[in-house]
Length: 359
Image (tube, helix red, strand yellow):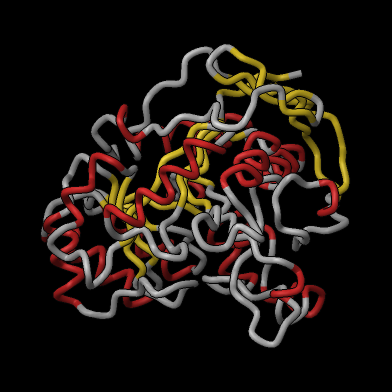
């Protein structure tokens, strides 16, 4: 057995409020614990989106009642909260800027609105962006003008990781994350997955793009699942929503890469604990750790997962490394497939956040 710190996933979609038939704070945080995560940061593109005090209160109430692990909530940037968002900063883990096609109504396509949100959002709270291609260049430029850190979500293309690398070399305060599906899947997997189950944002890329991510691991600050659950019926339907589930496979994929010599366990800890802890100003979790059997092999089977999502793009894959026990604040919360603390044991980490940082 090996012991890891309680891992942090800075990018999950838990679908509550508005779509609890495919995930809620109970099933989503259960999946997190089973995957070795003791903190998850939940995205705001829910129904309604988390953009004001009323919508945020809906998510907070549900999380307090159901969450099994600790959590933070993102506020979404939109047209309606250009001047009011900053007042809610102390209740959330950060603000999310959606600049490209995504699931939900939060896309920003107005340069002035984008600059206002970047300028007015308190520097003590994280600012994260879904930005690809030209929009990535735009958000880097505006964040540099306003002299504030920016975190770029789910980088997937060679041009993007090289742009971020150059920005870091120029001293710009930028960090980034990569999702497992962009490290382990490419557009060559689309025939196997099918048109609906292969839908994800950003889309699966070429082998050259994927290799550029592996070649620039030193530029990647975090591994984030971008856990985005939808039912198999939705994915197989006429208008499949984008997204893959990932909370229960991320660590297994990374530990398999460790076995294969593509990563070290130290690099995993750095990107799944140390860096997200620092970048998002997260509080300490005393007496918290995850116990792993690094030699255990297991087959990915969606029917055995705790997420409400009933499929996975990794179905049938054999992975190495199994979570056997999770201790959170001194209590065993997960052991050998069973949860030993009730709903609501998880805590909102936002009130204890520290200043964010990128260095």
